[in-house]
Figure 1 (cartoon, rainbow, N blue to C red):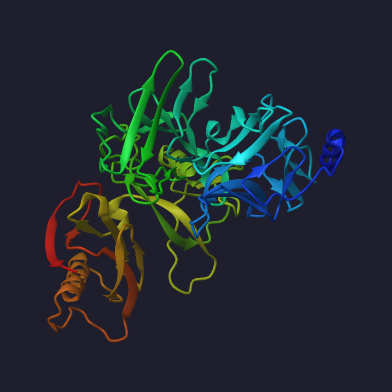
Figure 2 (cartoon, rainbow, N blue to C red):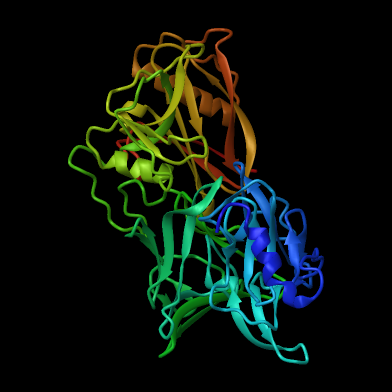
Length: 494
């Protein structure tokens, strides 16, 4: 159907109603002949979930989110792989019971193909499920014809299924977004194989939960009083589901960096956890190519204008995680980045790139693949609780004033640490003594004069550290638990 004919088609199809073909819905349901305008919302009967249109990177989508979520993080996106342009769009239920997005940019996007009935209603339930139901003559529900729970995106809600319907072939699985701005199916998927949860990266096993036994998974730490796990295996279907206590809010999210977590509490898989060549519980064994060692990692760095990349792939289904995986396994690749402003596509460099200094012109930020020796010293902050590990990296150059910092963690508070960067330090032992002095005096101020101190050469950075007791450890090299030497430099209680 040609551009702009979607509305015309809908009007013709609803003449049988003998009345207006369109009205704005203000409840939890849409009846045949009614529609939801772009600026309007459906809200479930108890107010738990909201359905409406939203815009990301100039493209429009129809989605569902927790009403109480101030960030409106979407738990389901109807047209994730088929975005529309502009705001001239409506969600319609026509007189035949076909649920579709009507927009001025092309043909209608039908959501319930071959699952329609003339006497039907579309309802947003308090479970977060958006359903089209056939009705009896008295208005009661006869059967469910279509439901959003059969077409998950990146989020598993209580009552949703992961698995397969053996009768219909219906598959229930999660697929991550490409990135935070592009909800199209991305790098990671999450499936149920009958005994355990399996995360895959582009079809290859990336992580598995371990077998579900006695209400717990081998490689997932959860509190039994929070979740109730359900595993079903019969002649009709094989699936996993979970439930929570009445009134509890929960959503399990598979994010674009391979993280898997309940946004309201529990961390199952840390982002990028299985990317290093380390054997974390549940991670699939990844052997580095012969040109790499196990301590190679990506670091976002400012480099001098690198010119044209050595290779570019404009496939918009690729995200940063794909780019890094491709680069890591290509011995000639030294750095990568995405191509487009929405974080899709890949570009790669094969030359060693000079790092930019403060004030340098023609700077460009790339993800540079380096070994720990190239990256410099590494600071680890360990927490007494496994869930709240914090990993902070600070990289120094031995000439010029340069510092790079990263901080990862949960349940963290902000503390400020003045980092003294001595210009012209030539020997590693002096650099090491400066760092150790800073750490010790941050934790236990003693008023000692720092080695190689010069006035005016202080740079302040904000660090994230856990609110509970931490142990600061300085390592001279190595990552992922493989270290040449360790030195404890202090404790802090809060």
